Image (tube, rainbow, N blue to C red; front, side, top):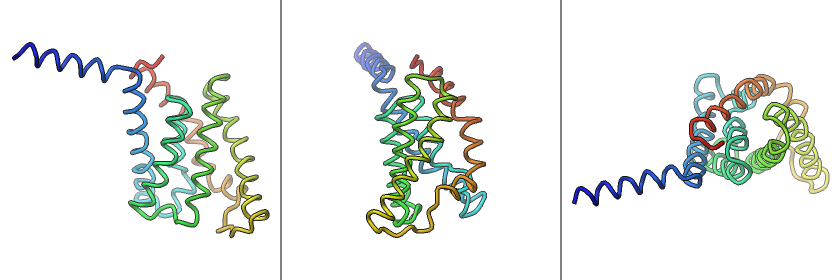
Amino acid sequence: MKEKVLENKNHLLETLQSTKAKYIIGTILLSGIGITLPRIFHVLAGTSAGATFLPMHIAVLIAALTFGITSSTIVAGSSIICSYLLTGMPSLARLPYMLIELVIYAILLSIFNKKFNSYISLIATIILGRILYAGVLAVAINGLGLPTYGISVIESIKVGLPGIIIQLSFVPLIAKAIKKGVRLD
């Protein structure tokens, strides 16, 4: 009986140590962080904290650097949708725009990170991501006639500068620590 329990424990440990399990668990945890971190910022710094500190972006960017394109797009989608369902934030009007924005960042950073170091990849993603997002907004507003809901890429950059600084300062370091800790490299 003890041998069977020990064998089951060993099998469980082997399974949890597999790369696939690490990706799944990491994606789930980062999705949870993508839901929780914005709430923490809103409680500590008020309702405008999301636009200022960009907390939902952090989990998506870490997922892109750590686990890649599939994980980061799952984190983007699940964070936005679950956050809305649990907290009503972002508003339903802003939800599709934020979803598109985060998926753009997830895809770009995952692609750039295969060719460049994490800092260059992140800077390129922040710049090109905002340009692509501006294009999406232009098509949605001018081409499709959708309402703007007060969304402006230039204004979001100005307001979100503290968040961009946080991203550049901490996201690559956190991703590197996670990769080392779960032995993905």
